Image 1 (tube, rainbow, N blue to C red):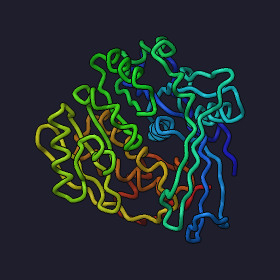
Image 2 (image 1 turned 90 degrees about the vertical axis):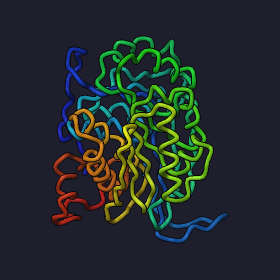
Image 3 (image 1 turned 90 degrees about the horizontal axis):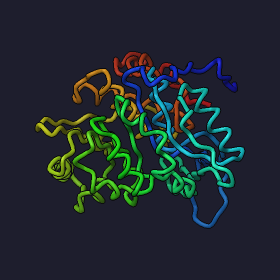
Image 4 (image 1 turned 120 degrees about the vertical axis):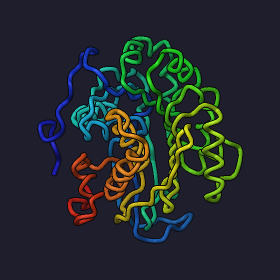
Length: 334
């Protein structure tokens, strides 16, 4: 059933006077996802299902935060095309304030194309995200006030290097959370690690940042320590079936096992994890207690066919974590 705006989460106001809103800056794109239950064969056509849905790392995190009840503002750019209009409307309907998103004439909305095999994990992906190069410091100048008033600002590494530098300079004391996006793009964060409060990364991204293999539990710990020495306060490393490793600059650390759920689509799980971490931070929850909730957000999202689960909520995650009827209410979202 197609949901209307009235069926979705209501927005949370526009004024800067409302405290502790989350500012999210980065990619909003249309996800075109192909999935199949058959083995992937190169240079051949395979029967499957193709879907279009809102996506983009920053946009996904923003939607998840809204579904967790947070006041969240998204800064991104879309083209003046059908995909762009759909992204803005669907994101607004999910409860995200999109007033700072820019619609750029003559530009094509960012598009992400991914192919998924029987295990639900992404086998291959292509992105057309040239429009994000237009998110320059000059274009974002009007959002400087949002940066100074936000309770947390999240940036993703789809942004241009100069824009990341501008955000760091404008953020002041606002805690910065960072999404590396990919092993290729995450190195943009290296000059700013001491200004980042929390980083969530996978093995490949941690390897790209540290310049060393992250292929064992011992190497995971070493990588986290390396990142702390560069100034990071909190590190959460996503390790697939191994679960999560979390670490604080104070020396506290631990492992969070993966939560078993029927995996339908892995796209977006990391974005839900980040949303859970931000949600916990704003509640004043210590990282050891925030990580299980964040892992629960990711687990719920793994059961959706799209990058965001429409039934994500604090109550849904808490039910999953209690272990009572683990799959109840987590049927694949259509």
